[in-house]
Amino acid sequence: MFVALAFAGVAIYSVFNIVIGLLVFVAAFGTSDSATTPYLAVGAILLALIGLGAGAGLQFVRKPWTKGIGLGLMIGWALWSIVTAGFCTGLNPGLYT
Amino acid sequence: MPYHEIFVGLGVLVASVVFVREARRRGALNEQSLTAVAGALVGGAIGMRLAGWLETLDLKDLWLYGSRSILGGLTGAYVGVLLAKKIIGYKERTGDLFAPAVALGMAVGRIGCHLTEAPGRPTELPWGVHAPPTTPECPGCLTGQAMHPSFIYEIIFQLAAFAALQWARKRLTQPGELFTLYVAAYAVFRFLVEFTRANETVWLDLTRPQWFLVPSVLLLALRLGYGWRRGYYDPLFERKVMA
Image 1 (tube, one colour):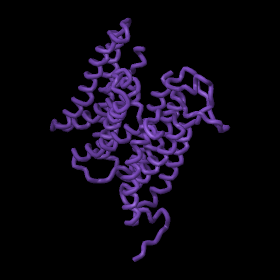
Image 2 (cartoon, helix red, strand yellow):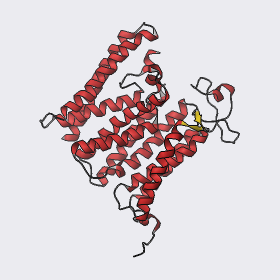
Image 3 (tube, helix red, strand yellow):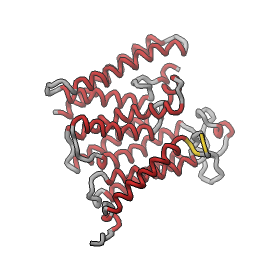
Image 4 (cartoon, one colour):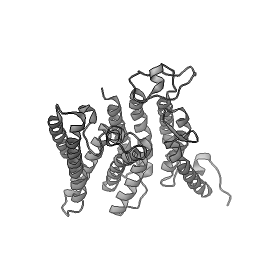
């Protein structure tokens, strides 16, 4: 059950990552290199808050499902972050250059 | 194609499969070991960026390259596991679960490095390789020189380490020593292979990773000596301790 909830947490984070990544992409589309930085920064902070902030916070909620989901959110943030070379984010900077 | 990211992703996937198999074999596939994995991944992701801060404070550089330091990632992962275990009050050793997973995962991940980064320093050895002139930070690529395939050296090391760990895990009985041996072997290998890597030298002809590794190797040597005196590695050498 715990492992299944962790997988669910990874899936939930992945949805946030894709949606926020798409929003940043749309917002930054057509702007110069330097003008994309604020969009990327906001995206990075939002994703870190969802993955690490909410993930860590759920560890302290005493409900049977929160620990697994919270751990999954954190694992999701780390996985997306590692494989896309973003700065504390799951956004791939290659998309904007 | 983002080959680097694809192979890093595949490396993480392979490492996860090996970790689960090893945890299952040792009867340690539980909430605590999954928490340790979360600590390793989050710590690793942050550690990769902290290592980038040592090289540059340029936000764009960090953004693009900040997550590519394996040494920073491994150090961050180690600290992350320690913190995660401390938070949940878990006292069992978990390093032995990670060692074979990290070795095989890095062998896969390094394929991406070989395909996208400067392969190494110029060489006249017959197995020197060429890389496209578009490869970033690679003067040898622009001049068409043959270079050391340093990432291939590392892939061979990681595969050999994985095979050695498979052999040693049945013999070592002291918890945590498989991981200690792997980290020590990798630290020494990495120090040596840096002489063929294209990384910038900063002082006394040594690169930043080498300066990081000098104290690390010394500490690991002390730790190995401690284990050797207590006979932790005797089963590997069939050494008999004097009574």
